[in-house]
Image 1 (cartoon, rainbow, N blue to C red):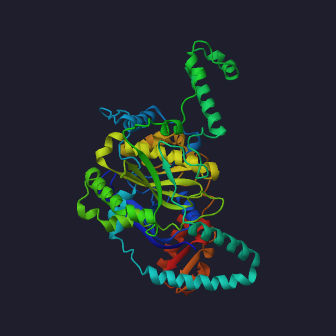
Image 2 (cartoon, rainbow, N blue to C red):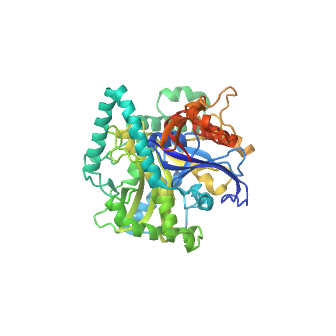
Length: 514
């Protein structure tokens, strides 16, 4: 199924939840009726982000609080001291029921994987984004069938490949496999995803060794011996501990075995976001109640703003079409709720998208009664470990996207503490290590991170006439569609859309025009 989007254009001058400016926010948005995971991957790599089925892109040089897409590199990730404190705190609580006194002073805000979505709830509600999905879907199906009949004459080979792919998806869907479950205190069963109790792959281990060696070199006051140390052993002035003990990996810290008489049991379940999924359906009521409790306590939302409609619209409706390619992760690609079950009740839910190259964090809500466990930080670390697990089978799936980094908002700067990480250049759409971006951000809210003045947006819209339009039950290139259009504002809107989504997405996605 092709992606179908309805471009809504620029919305400027609305309230910003970060700096509280009444009319400082500016973004362009579109309503996504459906999106393939590859199209969404390409969109977030151009600075887009979804909230439910609404997909938006901040106008970076215009908005009051520029929102830079941030990704962490999980294979090289090393938990910081404060991260380790959070993981140890959870283990103590599970093992002995111990509750740490006082919060860690160096911890980021508790409600971690917050996203720009909260700030845009009000705007999205006001937008006129309702349309007859049933009719649109039927029209599209009919139109795609006609397209398929034309294609059949040209490519028998492609058809056979497609049928094998469809068959694999049907087999996967019809297999009735239970949704993937990771238990904290046990090793996942063989054959059911990667074994998280094993040390990370050699590459990550080598990087850790290298980082440790560099750290030892930096600590050495005698700089002239640096060259020698790089080759030989650490000098004797270091305690033997530094030489013999490997630092514990993220997985070691998360999956440390608990005593048989542990006080609590934590289980993390990955549930597809679909009302056809029995596990999603049976836990919906509990999950919704938790969301209401969280929104009212943490964000002070009035009850009428966190009803079942809002919850479903923003956290249970996804435009992503689930895909199960044979070379993809066992759970498939698409949107999921990662549920944290403590002693049989849900205490947190991480909303995530699993895409071809990354796990993308959408939102997190948790039980405020368990704030002492720093569930925001804990869930982010679990999601990083989960990305590493998926990467063992699907090698290109190796990034963890944390939404937007907002340097001008102190509450949102915690995302920069998950290192190594990169920020997306808002002009050339290349990734730049965060360390290189921070000095520029100290001087200016809006920055082009790419230091090469000659560099341009390689994926920009070069041939807008090739853009695909879905109009009056037919799919056609924009070059054909525009001949029948008299309104000059129509062309401006379509060209703006093309420039923001880039050439590749413009040629694959269908732009709905009424």
